[in-house]
Length: 432
Image 1 (spheres, rainbow, N blue to C red):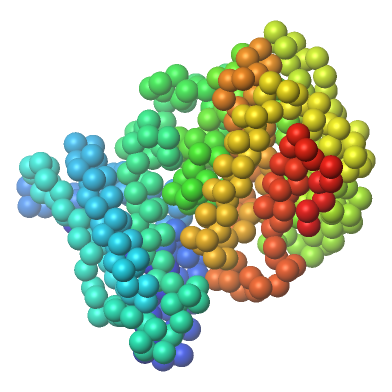
Image 2: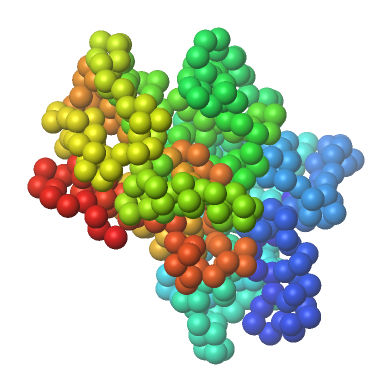
């Protein structure tokens, strides 16, 4: 049996300030804060004896990777499919309840999972602990549109669903009880990113990259794969030695034409030191990031496996708005244009949808890759957000003011300007 505390707020409307502050302090740095779920306790039994156990104190200290490891060890492989279906049912029922009752909140509840260790033929999952549930917080004087009253249950359920997601469903690939079967590939690795390693993941012979060790980015992949942005980030295969393993998004193209743009109003995360932010602000002011929320990093056109045109990093730093637009028009060309524009508009829609579902969501210092096949330019392109360590699901919970324009990420503005530059009738790209 395993007991998972779900949600990001563990106190109800009637909690005293002392209790409220104590619970907020308790969950700081825990997976409650980052994933919306925390282990309370879990035990595996066989022959009437406990063969493995995890307790509340361990749950408070678990990282994302450690919680995922516990989940993978606790849930038998033969019951994964049944549990996945059950989690989908719970998620759907909870979502429908909130849709029909916008003020419904379920604070400090738990998800209980149980199966017979001797005969693992059936698994049960139910929500329990309803003492702090409100049918309508509006009727009790609270504002259901205020994100500070969110219970975070949906976030917790989606994190667990991600742990249980299958290997080929296009969402995050949860690690199995065994380590990922990874083979490193010799040769050029992550371009200018020396700490990124090429690899092959099996089964499936998936061409992938091992990202640098970054717990914040690992959690970002877990979270974003449960949002509308799932189709616009690299597929996530799991974590190996504390590093995210993600797909090589260019692997399916014979002659990949790739443009790497820095997207957003800032080239730094809000958690950076004041000195670093100050230096990067000065740098941004000298580039198109300042006015357009987008700038070119590097790009290359490829035909028959050979590079036919390059835009190099040093030269791109000084690109003007007019020169950037010329570059975009030349890079996209005519045959690939329609599909790329369609993909960029879909990405914009997905980003806005994610913002609506997570009102204080921000994505800082990310990159946008546009990839299409130079040999088959009408083939479906990819528009993918990468470098996700600057992801924040709720900046308010990190004590930043979401209404302060200083903390806007500018991603939608950057996408608008890029779409405008690439559009056939574009005359002016400055939309902000």
